[in-house]
Image (cartoon, rainbow, N blue to C red; front, top):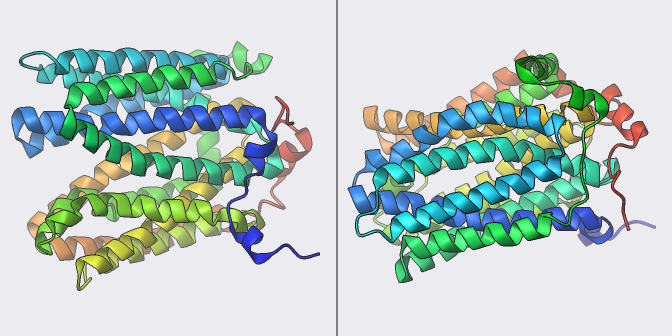
Length: 430
């Protein structure tokens, strides 16, 4: 009996239905990411309020970069050596304290700018330490066959948080100010920690736990470089974000079209596209060439961003951004699926740390490229040229890393070992 078309397309809720540990992971992640997005908006808002300087706001990203790189690599090592559940909960507690510091600073008669920058750096360090463990838990609580559906649900959760979080933050900032926004974020960490506390322990193997130090990190980096199929996906993502990341240009786009009312829509349009992917992601379970899907998504992303440079109205721009957001989530889904299904359990934490760096550094470089190109040429040339260069760079990445293009989840030996080994879903399903 053939499956109805709607069921083949719509999001697969099986992981939420049968894996209690995934339900906890999903609920805790939804709460904490929603709160984090509130602070993500509140910090630049407060810095702009204090300084009135675009440069001061831009320095937040630079302040976060170094701790994210350093602690992201170390966090990956921790994820492979310690109980991942404990690392995640410790991160929630640390984030609660940092949000509290921001709230206290915000109620001072003269909030200290230095405190905001230092806390932003510490937030990045905590994220770098925690995120690899959080990402590496998924293959331990969901079976190999359901990883695609679980990844799509996580994408849906992320986009929901990215739309609702800034909206909540904007309302709170307008009504009560930064202190209330930070306090709300602090509360979200308490709630998420309480949810994640109910997770079963996710302990490392004896081999993982025996390794430590710089050598442990370096061995993870060597493994990452040996996986040319996965390195190819990193190259595609880096090309897409470096050459066609438009976020820094959104205020100028709104001004160019005399549509200041559209600024918020420009920021949320991509996440709307991402949600559309999550809701209609049922078809992804039938795709076996994951690397080709990543490459196709990178080309589509670059084309959509490039077309914003010749868009006749702001509505066309918003439409292209929705399309770009859809393919951004598609790319992320198949990248995550490749390493969730094919990476051995003792490497997942370190690979998650490297993955986090790959998608964090690109947007920062993209902001520099897009604004510099706009300054030297024009807004529309920056957008259009970035899209074209992105498409060319993705094609070159496919040529440089043919293993990515050849990757077939049904024939890959590493994926088959993980499938036969039964590591996924080891904590149990209902």
